[in-house]
Length: 281
Image 1 (tube, one colour):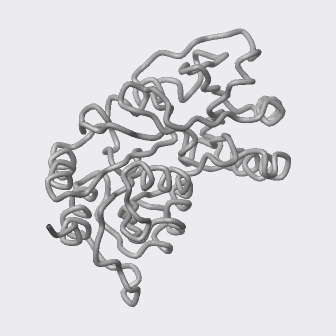
Image 2 (cartoon, rainbow, N blue to C red):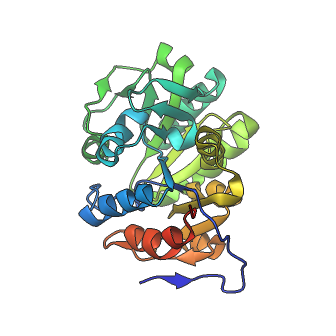
């Protein structure tokens, strides 16, 4: 099911680029690409519309999906990294060391699982953490286990706080934003994850990067997502689409709402909202 969210909004007539979130949007709840999603991505390309995907995942964890879709460029770390298909960097931004050290201290004090992504690795101290199996399934590579975090904190792409205690993560999110200020980006990528990364590592930055890469003006960019960390895309894109499973604050900012990611909501959005606005000729 698809519907208009803001029926009085004047929507762009031409879309030449789609920038999409991944988890909760492009993939289904099992973290897989549905066949109709892959087919819709091909229809986009055939219609002359470029596709960029950006995730809170590390680029290495996005690559299997990008390969399935035949993409030459994609983004990770909430936009802190844009890479080519061989993982060579287009842009890469690391968290300042002092911010990384403060983050690890605060997360340890609050009892969150702490994951550090640096040097292409997923680095953890507790292999038995509650969300380690889910992340292993999501990124499709194994963590590096260390007794304590050390030199890698100077090269951090992202730190994740993981916990099923959502109220604790709420407090951590507020505390870290106050402590880190403009030295870091602190966003909720899932109810059970808080992501801490470079201050320019937001998906709005990624939208601008994709637009530059493909040579598309921002007024011809559609964006689609489901979580608060996708809202920076909505600040930049001309056509804003929310998934049916989106948080309420995301739907409230959208021009259009499509179906859920447990069905073919992403493909429906491409066919109904984007491809009819594809470049003509």
